[in-house]
Length: 128
Image 1 (cartoon, rainbow, N blue to C red):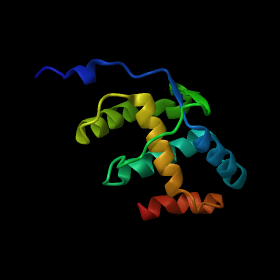
Image 2 (image 1 turned 90 degrees about the vertical axis):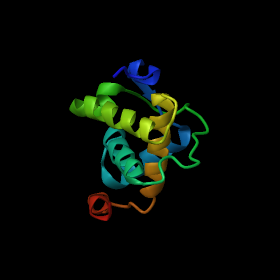
Image 3 (image 1 turned 180 degrees about the horizontal axis):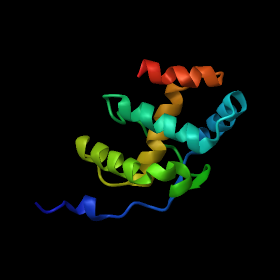
Image 4 (image 1 turned 135 degrees about the vertical axis):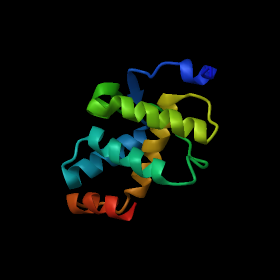
């Protein structure tokens, strides 16, 4: 079975998030001590766990913090790529990994709006 065109495109090496997400991460880091890449991983997981996909989520800009892929995803970069490819396929989206990751982070950070401590972050996984 041949892979569709979207599956042939490579995974980017650089990702940017919105200025809004960057500000939220700075706040969350001050409350939890977690770095933006770790907060991003939580946000992505929370957003992907939501059955509504990206819904009407849109990122107003990509002028915020920039991450290189190994920093953002760590040693599990291949797993994140596979999850994003599956997510893209499941919701019939064009392959735009930079925009999709930024949107997933934005959605996930919104779901983390109540977080005020590291304990609150730990409780996120019990609610999923």
